[in-house]
Image (cartoon, rainbow, N blue to C red; front, side, top):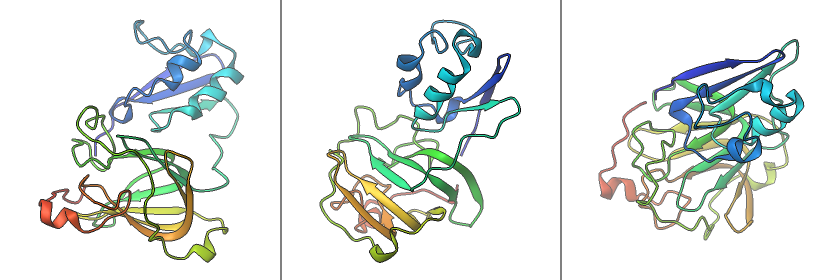
Length: 218
């Protein structure tokens, strides 16, 4: 898993951008075009808007490619609940107190926002790199509910996500999974498809084995 982070400093606020995590969702460009302008260099100028406005827009970046720090203040707050949303024909969008680890147990990322590859095509697994565009089809609906521990869903705590070798994401911790139509299911443990072939998306049905899916320990 690669990172490539750039820093843009303003008078009272600093914005960082990880190029490898950006899939051009455009929430920043549409939210504050004076600050975020892809046609300009540097493309991020934090002082082109009120710091409060920048602070409101940056957390809307669904992949966590953008982050900010205000001088003398704490970083972005941890979400009250852990949520994984299904983006149609695209990634798993995580908004949570989340930690992502590889199959060998190595910590890959701790963040409140992540976009996880579920098409199997990303060159930056386990994160999405936009390779799904035009290649992956899934409407983001939830057809089955194999999450376990639903009685624990109301509790608070971190969400542990493990990218297993050549297999699914195993999630552990209180989590709500939201389909593209707004359907929600809650639970505490489940296996989410990341090969793109499961017939029970977003959950794993073992299709990665038949497919010969390869995702070595990142």
